[in-house]
Length: 311
Ligand SMILES: CCC(=O)SCCNC(=O)CCNC(=O)[C@H](O)C(C)(C)COP(=O)(O)OP(=O)(O)OC[C@H]1O[C@@H](n2cnc3c(N)ncnc32)[C@H](O)[C@@H]1OP(=O)(O)O
Image (cartoon, rainbow, N blue to C red):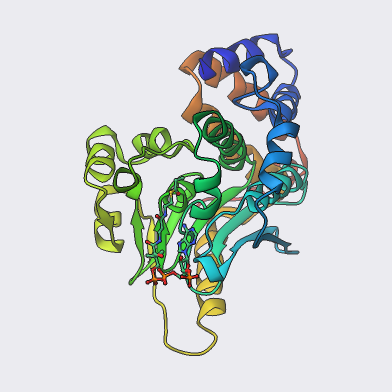
């Protein structure tokens, strides 16, 4: 259904090079669910605000790499309702960051995220509220994954439940040697609802995804690398400034992918997203449109003028 909607939107878009930008713009207001799905963003936002605690902190750096921190250490960085709302706000800010190229998503105080705040979950346990929360988070995380920035989840400590789902809303995952990603949903009598199952299948394939979900398996860095859930390992040192060292390592890892002008990096991400999400003919048309935004652009002209060789 989502693909059909996306295809319709693409077909409606003109063939000019701005069609992708317009598509993203439209998506950012509605994304997967909108009023046509009996979903009112504002109404759900207000309901979620009744469960405060923690914060989602965004630091946009001159390097073009932003750091998004899930910050609720007293609850192992579990998502309160207000944090879900803040996440959506921060995604909106990133959608409009024209100088942006990369994003690192991490947890505060040495652990990634323990999923949704169980206190809020208990209070929202009726099916209607649960569905609304799930739609809100699917919207926010889908928009996070579709940002025109190359994103990395820096997984320290535990990424459990919704925290594991959050890692799949990034393009890449870097794990520390003592970290664990675990889809614990089955133990909670649940399945993922923030889009984590669908994204997991895309990342590791349906066989491995079924094992991770069906067995609620603990994925350490070795297993993560083996099945393709992890893209690299970072060494946590025992020194005091551990967190910054890891963040620096993640920035170094990311830097090779975000080297270059922002319009080119953003174009790279856009063609990767369309290839990942769209049927081939639509992805090809989108690729052509995105190509049109960089062809003859400053970076292209400069490369031509310098007669660069790729040795
Ligand atoms: C979308 C679907 C979902 O996300 S469902 C939620 C899935 N997550 C969970 O079930 C996580 C449950 N928590 C745990 O398993 C453990 O707390 C983990 C994260 C392994 C940490 O264990 P440990 O290092 O021993 O610390 P602890 O248990 O003493 O926790 C410290 C304080 O944090 C809290 N905490 C932890 N996770 C949550 C959570 N998801 N929601 C609300 N609070 C959480 C603990 O209750 C504990 O608080 P307190 O110090 O007892 O007040």
